[in-house]
Image (tube, rainbow, N blue to C red; front, side, top):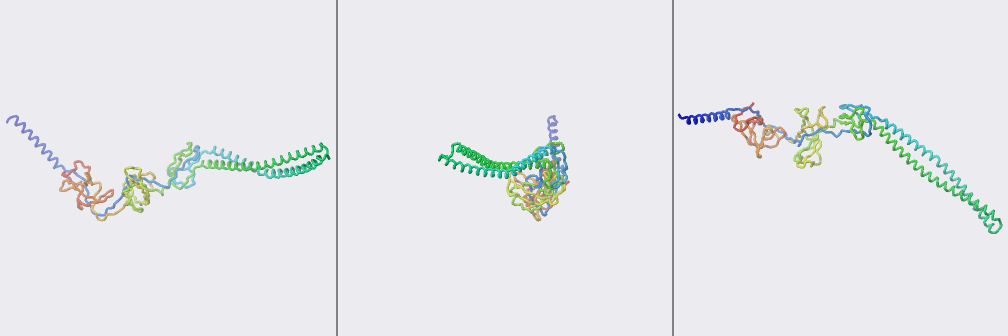
Length: 408
């Protein structure tokens, strides 16, 4: 046999060996898969939010500082319950006390000036009235005498000196009358000054009230009953007006807030039951009830429109806190006696839905028609029969139609 023929023979043997190995690998390898039987029974249909819900509350009070001062005492503790009116912390109010004392003194001085003016005014009125009456009588008498002497003088019955003396007396009486009338006008000015003094008293009283409030703000109290969630200040720290110094929440008022797609709105009704899970205990579901559906639709996200809903946990766990995440399923309907499989076992490609089943020991693709579903299970309307075995471990290496498979 020539060397050329030997080479061709050896190459053919090698090809046969490779083909045999490939055949053996393909048709002798058996993969182990997780499966579940197609079941018939009741299927609870649910609506799930478009994103994770959040624990929230309407009974939260954020307490902010009203004055600039240094913290001298923190009386409350985070996590502890307080009642409305309980002291949370105290501030250094030395400056506020000094301002209060000054305002009180200014208020007292203004009141004293007003009281004195009120007492003096009636006396001044009586004095000026008496002076005016006396001046008017003196002027009338001087005028009468002057007129009489004027007639006598015109008839050359008295000397010019006597006439000049009478005129001087009349001028003096007129001057006294003018002074008395001016004093009467001054009384009106005093009455106006009393009004100014009254206004000053009111202004000083208002400043005193401000000083009293500022002093009161030196003691920060709880505005509501609840649990202290935050207390971010310590003794010695300087707080400024508007700075948050405590946050109190009424834990019995907690609820879960979530967003659902507007397409699900017609399926929701206040009072529907729901199940909620929290990350801290992901394997436990808590019963809840839908108690509020927002009357408006949010358009913040241009590609989707959502509706805000609120649910209250029937028996709130003690670990529940505002801000925690929550997964929500709202029960909207129960389908009676239908076929269903785990939702995770269903695949979609080119608008075609299918599952993998074990048929005669091999993986087979089965096109199906689905109905309604919830997070866990989906209704099967066509393509599967009760008790057929559906593969659920879709991430199994080598999983594809025709491969030999067995249940784990």
